[in-house]
Length: 170
Image (cartoon, rainbow, N blue to C red; front, side):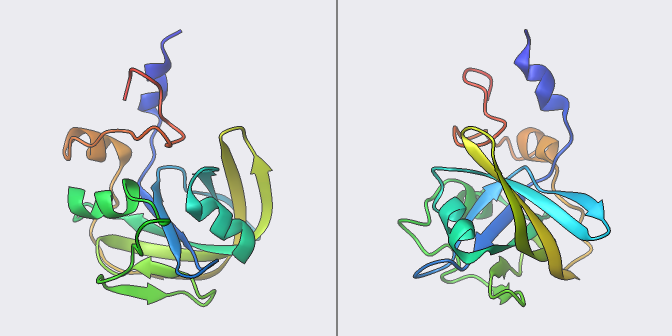
C-alpha cells in the first residue's frame, strides 16, 4: 500500500482555538471542512494530545480560522509547532474574538467561523468535533492556503501529531 496517495487529498490549513482554560488554546490543523448547509455545520479534527482538544471539550465551542497565502513559517510555527501548554499563542499578535469568546488570528487568515459543539467522535489518535456555526466573517481577499501550497511553496513538514502524518513520508 502506498499511503502517500492520501497526500493528494485537497485540504487547507486552519487555526482552531478555544477559550477553555487560563488562556485560549490554539493549534494548526489541516482538517476543517463544511459538513452541512442546514443547519450550517463544520467539523475539525484535533489530536487528543493537543491542549486545544481538551480546551474544546471543556468549552463546548471553538473558532476555526482559514489560513491564507500571506502566512509565513513564523506564523505556521507559532500555531503548529508550539504547545499551548507552554505559550499563549495570541500574546503579541492581532486577533479578534468571536461571539463564542474564542479568539482567531486577525492577520494571515482570510475568514473564520465560530461554532458550538454539537457532536464529537473519538477517531483513535484524534477527536472530530462537529460544530454549528454561530458566527462567521470574511477577513481578507488573500487566497486560502492549501496543504499543497504549504508543502510545495513554504516547504513545510507534516508534524507527528497531524492527522495526515505518515511515518517516513512527511
